[in-house]
Amino acid sequence: MDRLRVTKERLEKDVASCGLHAGDTVLMHSGLKAIGFVEGGPDAVIDVLLAQLGSDGTLMVPAFTYSYAGRTATIPFDVKTTPGSRNGAIADRVRERPETVRSAHPSHSFAAIGRNAHFLCDDHQLEHAVSEPSPLTRLIALDGRIFFLGCGVESNVMLHLAEAMARFRYDHIPFSPQWGEEYLIASPDGPIRAHVSEHPGCDIRFPIVADKLLMEGRGIRSSVGMAQTFLFNAKDILETGLQMLNENPDILLCHQPHCEACEPRRKYLKGIGAI
Image 1 (cartoon, rainbow, N blue to C red):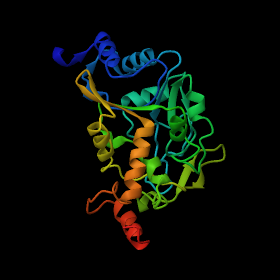
Image 2 (image 1 turned 180 degrees about the vertical axis):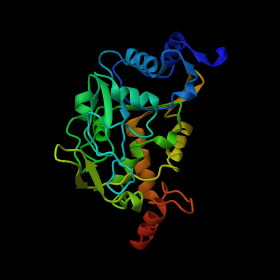
Image 3 (image 1 turned 45 degrees about the horizontal axis):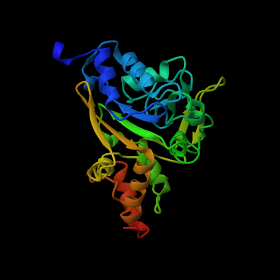
């Protein structure tokens, strides 16, 4: 047990060696359990990261809710109260902190702390889960970075932006038919429905982009506690993913036989002669 215990001092030492710099604007995907038994829990991790980024830095995390109207037992989205879904304990705690700014997108909101939090998260419109204007496009404008802490690089949401920008865009096709094509949004008069125009889909194949960048020396591999970490320039992720998609339009679609997202998207690409 003691071998797996991670103190604040250990966190500070490890985070300082990950390649993060003061003033960075960083989108982080994370998994707390992979780090070990962290003294102070997710708040300790967040505090160390914010200290590393400094007063000019910004930490952003996904606060996704997947508040689609067709999904069973969905809570209508309220930017102030709706919890995240499958974002991890660290991201959930970032979302809960009083200094956090959260974007108001019903399914794909982001939460940020720091100098650029409002620039990243304000005015996140219904029509743009990931495309312009969104926290992801603003991260690119700030020459931001993407940090993976204790989680797989398949969680790389920036590649959904690449899919939305690709020559043969396929994100108009719902992720899953049972989720429907409408959002549920809370209002004083009860839930309202709004049309979904972008459907970020399956991420099983996303690691191939990070693998390519690491092989080319355009990524930093390190560790925090027991967890492996990866750090990339956000623009490198986007441009590499976009290049791969434009050369091979179905390269990020998986081959799982019953994937509700990828099968209809590959069929669409075949139908328009893209593959």
